[in-house]
Image (cartoon, rainbow over all chains, first blue to last red; front, side):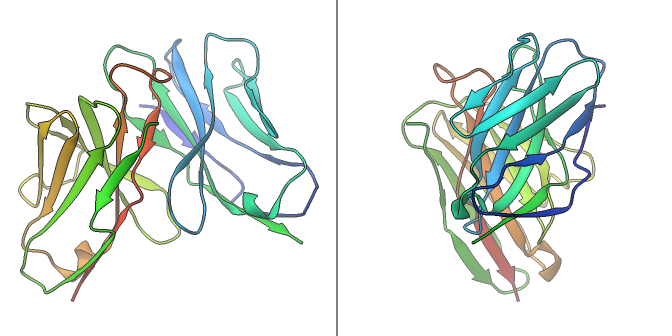
Length: 116
Length: 118
């Protein structure tokens, strides 16, 4: 079974700083997908970024980028120039890359607070 | 695009009654929808996978007779909490996968339903 571990329950940084959230996972699969989801106080889950395991290039979405280390099974999220609106719970998630809709396995979450 | 709605957003009911929660994909078709439960300050726990036109697949430990799932069309799945009890109070979230478009394996989430059983 796949597992996802986020070792940082809470983090706090000042506005405009850069912050990195950690995520490790365990799987025997060779093809899979990794995601970071954001859950602000509204509790709406929002996709931040996704990464296909077969791609060596790290995914980037504006201020958000990942450091995907496949051999180490690590998938960290870097938020540059952090903004107050980035305050939220962040969940790392794993999905197998098989045919058909595959379920997401979530980590425990990291509560990120951006301070003014 | 890729909008998922849930109704109601919050519901309060008496113990012993049943509550139905709807999950709709508004601008795409979804053969598969997922139902999650989230306790305060915790992660999402998958309850079941809802497949259009067939029986849902429940995760271990989730009572299928307690949490009835119906996925009658490509845009609608319903979760019915039967004979609700206070311990069923929680935040329920659905997600859907875009059958024909969008990034592969990406799930889009509804805004959630807060259930309080008195």
